[in-house]
Image (cartoon, rainbow, N blue to C red; front, top):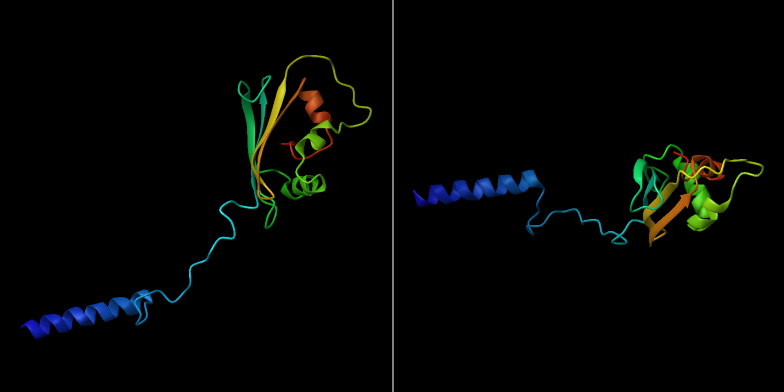
Length: 147
């Protein structure tokens, strides 16, 4: 009886190994992929909200933006936003200061705060900028916060 039970156990182990693709060494044949870095090259969360700063703003919209290996995310124009960020090497303040020439906005104080949090080109990013109102926000020439 013992010989039969051992033969059945050995047969089950061989069949299971074959089904799982495990070779004679007892390890899987495919080598596991090793990440180049602990963090992705670029992965950002962008927000727009009403309030004087990020801590008190009521977030109205939020999108994700990843620029490497290809532009993607929930941003409505990821390719254009990534091009703009690459052009200024991720300097968000350069983007939010470039206003459309000739644009006239009221002096109404209804602050709109934009934020960017995450990783850009392997560096940690935490950016915040407050506009006086929505017109001033929409006057900037960038598509990064155009959602």
